[in-house]
Amino acid sequence: MKAQHGRMAAFRSGMRTLREEIGKGSAKTAAEHVSLLLRAMDGYENDVPHKNASRIGEYRRLYAELGRSARKLELVLQANDLKRANAAYGKVLQICAACHRKFRD
Image (cartoon, rainbow, N blue to C red):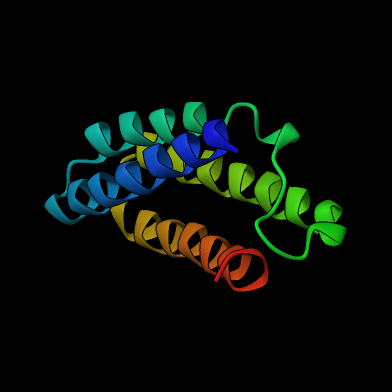
């Protein structure tokens, strides 16, 4: 659980920085931060939710979807498409919120 908390703290911090960089129009720097987010997710395969532990499959599917969405965001940023980056960032946030509603809050 400690490693899981560390990954989520790194992810949360990275998302804040990412939002700031997209807002500043710094696509290259933002793309670098997405790479950090993706590395922070390594090891999720062994994570368990805080609540509704019997739905671990759904939890892990959301985590995998989060990774796919973050990779899409990275590609959009690498293409320097800030308009699409805002939408892709929003999708990542939606997945975070859905997971937290179901398994944490």
